Image 1 (cartoon, one colour):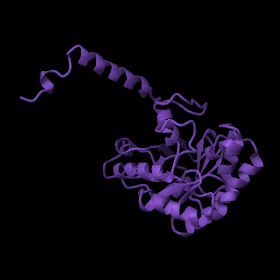
Image 2 (tube, helix red, strand yellow):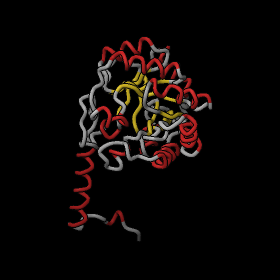
Image 3 (cartoon, rainbow, N blue to C red):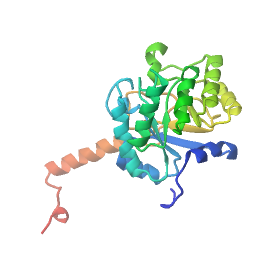
Image 4 (cartoon, helix red, strand yellow):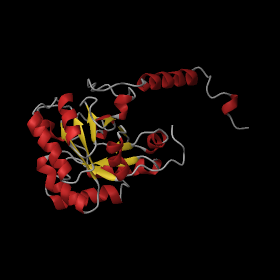
Length: 267
């Protein structure tokens, strides 16, 4: 846990962690109540991920998530977090058409959502777009390797093994001005080499221990989502089971007349 008056994490702080050798932590977050809880921990960043399409909206992937969806959830998270860095995902087709449109959409996430930075997927193909957004003083986090918005082309959620292409993508993201890059579902040795070669922090998810930090979907970390169970996830709790047990006990007590009791009444 951290002190209530702990200094907010900024983009420069995030970047400086690499030179200090401090390992970075990031988890997804989508609502006010959870962001308040997470902000009281030592987590460095909260990612309002387009993973909300699966764990919040119940879709099989993130492709149906809209910009309005992410703006809404980012606004909720921003109200609850006073310390952690807030990064908002740019959804599918909000940055792929052209750089000017991408800038406008990134601006909405900052201006309306209250994000501190945005994240977008893609390497060399997105370098000019990253440059355009960064030139407007909006910090960008890159994302290479398995890019979930590309699952139609990739054929699903699969480990990516084209080492030369992934290495060049990561380098292009850094050269374009991104302050950090997510490495998803790539061989651990490749992730380590990329981390050693880049001047910016790498955040791994399914990329081994050689990255500068790690990110997990919160619902996976807490054992609240069973539709997908990737090998790279460690479940630190089983809150799904706890939730079911608590609600079942509530139902039984209401039906048995045990709740509410005298201590819950107004007189």
